[in-house]
Image (tube, rainbow, N blue to C red; front, side, top):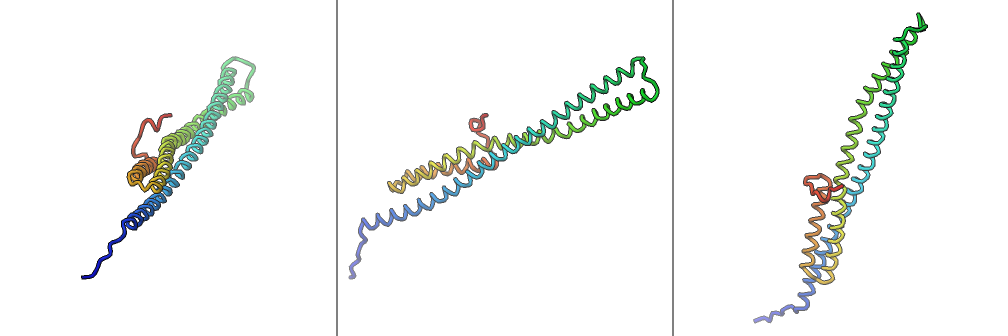
Length: 196
């Protein structure tokens, strides 16, 4: 009968450790990709929030200028109407000139009112985008933290060849990835993350 040579126990352990190290290293690379995506999502949410806030501020400033002009036109019209109501020396062409000017101020007042009604929905839409982006941002922040910790823990698991440490890093990475996905789509609301 032929003699069968059994592998050395130390060689088997080394091969097992190399396989474990490769798998953890590959998984860590996936963690890093998830981290990059979460970081990109967070940066985009922040930019979107700031741009929407700027747009909302611009629209509200434009709205306020229309309100001011509406009130100025109303005040001017009222002054002219009061002058026309008084018996005065205004007669003929001069009286008609004042009446035309009062109508012009009235038309401008109406136009400013219509303009501001068009501006208000634009400002509110920009505020809605800002608020949604503001809700997204914390999810990305916490996702980044969890994914960074997962990468560190996975590295420790390679050095210590500890499978429980690796599984812990996997749990952290899954939580970070779920938070990142929630940052993109807001499918769940976690109140303490969205507190202002």
